[in-house]
Amino acid sequence: MLTANGVTAGYREPVITDVSLTVQPGRTVGLAGPSGSGKSTLARVLALLHKPFGGTVEIDGETVTGFRFQAVQRTRIGVLFQQPRLSVDPRFTLRQAIAEPLKNQDRVEELASLVMLTDDLLGRRPHEVSDGQLQRACLARALALNPRYLICDEMTTMLDASTTAALVGVIRAYQRESNAGVLAISHDATLLTRWADETVRLSAPRPR
Amino acid sequence: MVNLEIDRVSVRFALKGATVEAVNDVSLRIRPGECVALVGESGCGKTVLASALLGFLPGNAETSGSARLGDVDLLAASDHELATTIRGRQIGLIPQSPASHLTPVRTARSQLEEAARVLGGDALQAAERAGLLPEHLDRYPHELSGGMAQRVANALALVGDPWLLIADEPTTGLDRDLVDGLLDEFRRLVDDGHAVLLITHDLAAAHRIADRIAVMYAGRIVEVGPAHEVLDNAKHPYSRGLANALPERDFLPIPGQPPLLTDLPAGCAFAPRCEQATAICEDRPVLTDDPHAVACHRPC
Image 1: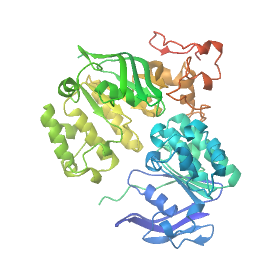
Image 2 (image 1 turned 90 degrees about the vertical axis):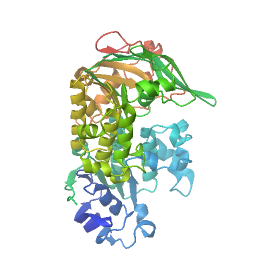
Image 3 (image 1 turned 135 degrees about the vertical axis):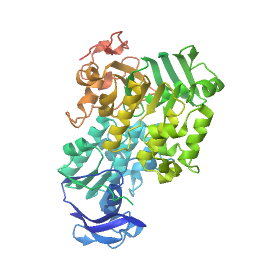
Image 4 (image 1 turned 30 degrees about the horizontal axis):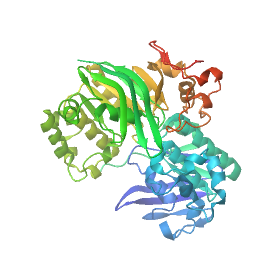
């Protein structure tokens, strides 16, 4: 289980206050809410990329004590962001991007075929591929270390309907095989209805 | 009021050892009082077409065909002519990810007032029409939320009162309420006699406001027709696949990947992914001349 217990987090001012949420292995939890309600902040806390002001994060029974580079459990959680272009080193080929978390290159081909990237595309750099193709590479990279949990923060925003359906299909297949838990954040209520087992809504931010 | 007549426009980029065929033989007419949506997956050439219309292509681009706005051919016009008579005055552009297009060191007000001065518009009126309150205008771009930055971009595009608005992926990253508000605003402009070219991968948005939808695949328009016809009764297997991939429909992807724009097949570019393809698809299909036109040998 990946759990946020009474998490309060933000950037100087709190954005989310006393929020709790649980992602069970094998399940997909949708996270919805208007702009500024703290969806991405909660995602960053659960991905151990942002230290909360208060509350705890637990992963498979362990309470997380260090965040960001101090988080020993970081590799158990895969993360996908809205803008693949900001998530990949522009100097890397897609092959290097996928291999980044790996100690050796052995699994690159397997991961690439999982997300349907051809050999020709693997040799290209981010500016030579479309957003959809780059997001496929980001998904392959996120799955490289067989994460127990996958956090998808507006992963499909830049994608057309067909690519969205394809990537959600890849994630579901990975879940069936690995029993991983998924947190899916989206503005798109229709998508979450179709993708998630249950959806949690964050309410609008308090006016400041 | 004049029409925009895009006639057999192609755009190529010369790279070392390869040519990117980004836009191929695209014809499209946009009339005042009409919203046309250009849909297709990212990388299919939509933004390149918009850039070509405004003279924003990089130096290695070669264009052919014409895009006539009244007496002016946008593809042949000089940069000076585009800058002094077209951009902002006849065609307004709402660029992709507006937050990154605003000048980061100046307030929204200062940018809007500059545009108003140059184009001869009214900054405050444009801001109000875009749904901005006066206090929002004193913020710097990093202090604006995505929705507010979008409104500033809208105000900038509208301040010179252009008759055609080109909106490039304006709904990306906005939540549903903001998307609906923005689309309603576009619809009002269209009903006032403006024209809107909505470039998007969001079929739901296209369905909501467009009068006509043009579907682009690998740089070519493969289907164009009345919005509801194209989405609910698609003739091209690609459009049909795209509509069926929506989460409220089958939520199944189209198998395969689009071809590389450096290595387009001689025949139908969609044939390698198409279940209905036969030998005849090795010849390139021509877009028919109907109100609901399709470029396919074996339409659905």
